[in-house]
Length: 294
Image (cartoon, rainbow, N blue to C red; front, side):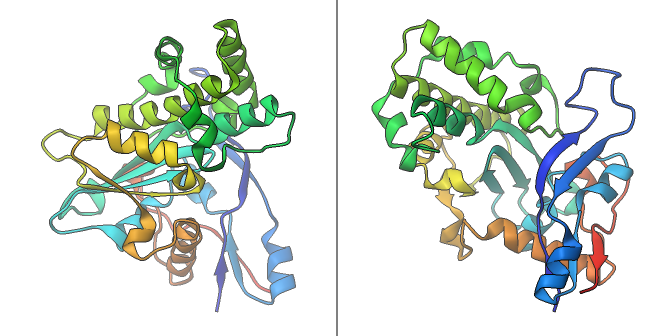
């Protein structure tokens, strides 16, 4: 028995999320020491999955593309796997496609900006918009969303990744200040940030998923799947695509990422590569992670 876990990413610097020419050697910093986990549990532990991909010139993410392929590829349907965590990321599996046909990338902010604004508005009494109730009571301000869509990240082509360095607390507070400058109510502000998440996901799909091979089913996981406003708006924005919680496939939305990294750990233990260069931009497939004995 062995364990694999996804660490909390504190900082990840790739060539895409820093000014042109500033980063020569990509790096990433995770917290959660595998030696402690192995000692406390008595279970061999595999961790620190990103670095091997980055050493080969990749972004170090998204790494769930390979498990997504193993679990969800279909001979008839084009499948999409959308994880809405702090950042939203998507894997697209063309019908009857091979490893090389898989594409994956971060689409932009997921829950991160929404959560930060909710916490600020409520002085920390609420940490997130439960079930999207606040957003449902507000009205998005489209002119602000149009302005935010000019952010350089949305102009990049995949593979691309992002994180708190772009869409963290600082940007969220700038967005909230802009909402208040336009005299938006608290719920209108939350609705506007929520709509930004939806529209950036839809924008990525319109930009990078061929019209001739559209996504038939989009399975959603991560905390955002519990935001009913996000799910409703995705269904409205992605005409012709069935947007469903990944639970409908038999895999828990809250457990999907844990399952994905358990698969990656198992592949590494057996000497098999776990990244997909078409998703991360790496020069080759790599065995991922570091093995720690208890």
